[in-house]
Every structure is written in C-alpha cells, then in structure tokens.
Image (cartoon, rainbow, N blue to C red; front, side, top):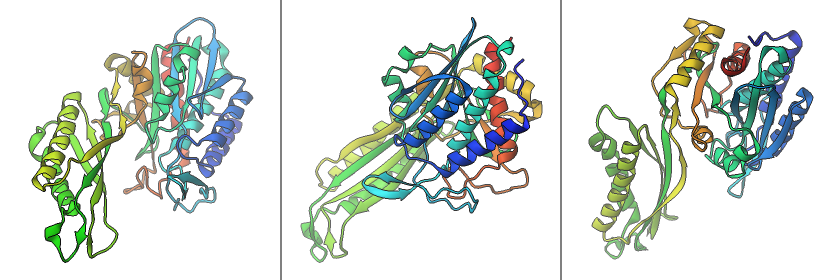
Length: 400
C-alpha cells in the first residue's frame, strides 16, 4: 500500500502551495505563471515533465513494470472579483475580450493542483510501494472547454504513455472530508450558442416601419422554455438557459439586431440532439413569423458529457472507501454541471473515473457555491482529503 500520511513538513508545503496558487490565479489559456510554478514543483520532486497544449504541463513518473495511470488536475481561474476576505485573497487581474478583469480561483482549481502536486510528491518518495507509470496532467482552460482538446491536439498521447484509465477530481460544496461519485453518466454535456437576430431599424414613434428584433427575441426566449417543459420527457434531464440578451442603444430607436447567448445542458446524446434541433427550429420559425431575415446561430463552445466507467469506477470507489471509510464515500445522482475532463480518455478510448471531494465546513448550512466570489473551501480536511483520494485511486492500479 502507498502511505497517505502527511508529515508536518508535507502539510506545511501543501498549505503554502495552495495559498500561493489561490493568491495568483490566471485566466484560461493564460496560465503562464501557474505553469512555471507547477514546473518548479515537479523539479523539486524530481519528475520529468514537458509542456503541452500551450499552458499545460505533463509529468511522467515511471517506476518499473506495471499499469499506466493518468491523473488530471485543471489549473485556470475565473473572471471574478474575490470577496472572501482572507489574507491570501486574489487581487490578480487578466485580459478578457480586450478588457482588464479581476481573476479568482472561484472553482477550486487551486486545490486540484495542490492535491496533485502533494500526491505526486508522496507517491514518488515511496518507490517500494508501487510499480508502474503515472502520468500527471496539469490541464489549462477547463472553464472554456479548450484545455483538454488543446492538449490532445498537441500530441499528449503521442508524447506520454497511453494509460489504462484517466482519473480526476473536483472540489464541491459537499461536506469537507467526504467524496461523492456517480457511475455511468456523471455530468452533463454543455453547449453554448450565440444567436444573432436581424430586424429593421426605425424611430420608436414609427414602429410600422420596423422589424423589431427585441420583440422577436422576447418571443424566442419564452418559446425556448417550452423545449424542456413540453418536448423533453419528464424522466429525462435538460436545461436551456438564455444567459444574455443584448440589443439597442437608445430608448426611442427600434434597433436592427439583437443578440442572445444560450447555455444548454443534457445527459444523453439523444436528448442533446433533440434540444439543439428544437432551438434551431424555434429561432428560425419565430424569425419567419416576425418577417425578419434568417438569424445566425453560432456555436461558442461545447463540453462533452462526462461518463464514468461502471466497472473501473466501482473499483476506484472501493479503493476510496478503503482509504476514507464507508460513510465518507457516497454515490450520488448526476450533476448538470459540465467538465472537459472526459475528452482526455475519450480521445484514446480508455475508461475514466471522476469524483468530487467536499470543501464545506460541517457546520455550514449554506456554503458558497463554485463560481461565487465567496467560494473558499476550508483547508482542513479538504486538501488532505483530495491528496488521499488521489493516492488511493492511483494505488488501486499501481500499488504493490
């Protein structure tokens, strides 16, 4: 077995790593200083590594014959102004669409990198306890669904040994010290669309001369909600959200265009295909009903559905229970959130397993959620739980 106990020195190193990362977040595909920090950490451990996918880092720890296992940690922050009030709070900024914005680790990726680096250090120091190869993947740009694709496109699996399974984890506001997992469909596929509606501009006092894209957009927003309510079966799951609706510059001018941005979540390919087709049908039909030109529908991004392999996932869950206790590892329903983690395994057709480790204090009845400016997992036992979970899951394959 691989020992998961943290010495005082290892614990202090873990905390300092976490606080440094928390205080210095960077936006997706801009994780240059984070990349350098990870590389220095890997050098200190004594692991060979290479850059991949722009700002990604991959380290390989080979220790004799045995299985190859990959473990992924994502590295990017979010355009959020931190409101936690801790002394190591972020004051960082980044560039987004030509504007300077505040940046925060509002989704816990700092804890993911910390757990992976700490686990890598502990495992590497116990050569007699395991045999095989571990591929540590520090992936950029999870928040924009760019990172895993960028790494695969950059030859990740040509440069690193092909694993038997890809593992990963994410902090979430469950109770700290607990782990949560789902077999099969674990997280939703996500699609984002930009819809541009075209009309005819006119003076606000002369609506008869216009084709009003705001009225057209209002009908589309309302009609889109009937997809989930009236086209998707009650036992299936889907979400259609209109996140932005922008149009016009002045109150007495009917504008000539409007822009909607949509976010769609689904748990099965059939439902996804139906929902996307229905969106196209409704948008075009409402435009025709308004006498407007055909709208433009553009894809902004797409996240693959995250699926955990039922047999290999059960094997990992058993190892997690053996490490943390039966009552601390809980099987839960799927989440409608999304992750690009699955592409790493799907691209080479191997199993994957992804789980959540809790970050909320036991007595916190209403913890801040991911992507909140107040999101701040408690350090103890959250970080140690992430480390132990990573080691136990990897150990299920390589431990002697």
